[in-house]
Amino acid sequence: MKKLVALLAAVILGTQSLYATDFLFMKNVKFYGEGQTVGYAVQNGYDVNLGKLVPSMVGGGISEGMLNSNYSGVTTFLTAGVTFDIIENISADFSLAYSTSMGEGNKFLGLVDNPNGSATKGDSIQSYLDNIRVQTANVTIKKLFDVDGLSIKVGRQYYGDEDSSVMYFGIRHEQPLFGLNLPLIGFDNVSSVDAATVYYEKDNIKANFIYANLGKVLGVPLNVDGLILPLAAEPLSEAGLDLGRDTTVIGADAKFLNLADIVNVQVYAYDIENPIVAHYSIAGVKPGVEIDGLKASVEFAMNFAGKNPFSTGDIYAPEGSGITSGANLIKADVSYDIEKKAKVRAGFAVQGGTEGIKEFLDGEEPGKILIKPFLNFGNYVPGIVFGQQEITRLLSMIDFRAINVGADYYKDKFTFSADYYNFAARDNGLNYGDELDLKVKYKYIEGLDFFCAVGCFMVSDDINSKIKQATGGAMENFLSDITSTIQLGASYKF
Image 1: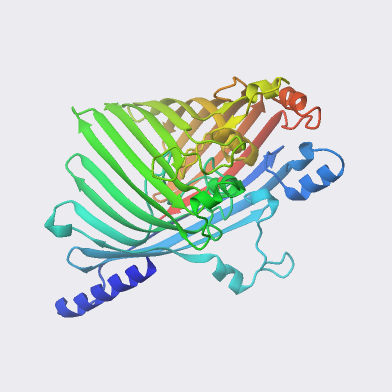
Image 2: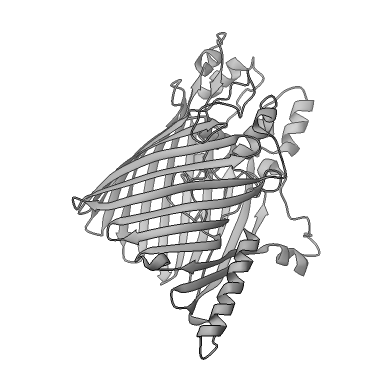
């Protein structure tokens, strides 16, 4: 991919020198950027910390000591870039990104930190430079093959919609902590991929085809796959394990808009190929309607895993591991905008699934525990507590059902929001708990917003007793009765 980008850049530079009489390299230059700073504090949080887990285990048992009790931190990211035309129908985009995190939160297992910094001496210049990276560096050719609406983009780029449940590489706003399906190692609010993407947009059709490179399995996080899939042992010879081989994504997404003036339909299919799972595929469909201020949609997506794309060979888990493919996602959303003054909304989602867990939690002998996690690169984050904590997000990946009702109220420069969630297991009926989130957003000036959010997750009465019973008392009060968070932040765009 890097060689292809370099070759394409050389061709463009040569073309520019031949056809541009004024020899100006950049025309229609536009600078852009955005950033976010969020401070947060969590009481009785559910983030795993090995520094607390190990002493707890050495002491003779696993308890709430394995979790961070109270912690706080600040996360910041900033992107800045430039777009420009090279010649007619050929443009380029280049941007840099800086990100940093301070505090106990936003660390996988409490281990990730900045090794170059010092609390008493401050950070070196190099430590800041190490956090600056090329975020986008791509070239777009428009009107490809003289076809209106057809273009190709090659290089480092963003991909997908931020509200996508299955595939998104881009900026994730107002998420200071881990999101539900974000990479666990090397987490960041800003991600992008090396890819070649063909876009078609004309009339009521928006479609794209992508071939992306996610890097080597030991060098780049593979979402939650990076934690689960390397545990495989027996199937590795079948998959032809080669840690020097890159992981790739190939897929297509098409949206058909304003059918009969009110109906939209989205269909997509992606195949992720890497040295361990061979092929891990996702396919889905999302129809929706829009009538005046009413919007409603229903999404269904299915996971596959096997030697071939969209097969079900289950080769990514050894026999007897209890991990199998075939998980699905069902997600429904509806909202109604009341004359730009308020909005009410509701949602329902289920994903993943298990078999045999109910018998295990009830103290019975299960025939076999089967775990069918729904693995993806989406950006579905329900709740600022449940959706951003390591323990609860793992629950949601494995066996998850969420119900959400909420409302927004607009007053001058303020937006007031309230959301209620109920979380439970999809298949065994175990109620995880309830969450209430309140948020205030203030538009100071165009491009600069301030916000404050508070969230409270209340664990159900029976979940701790079920866990205690299933573990023979080893995990008493594993989850705190109430976990709360407060977030203060600013987002800016230019």
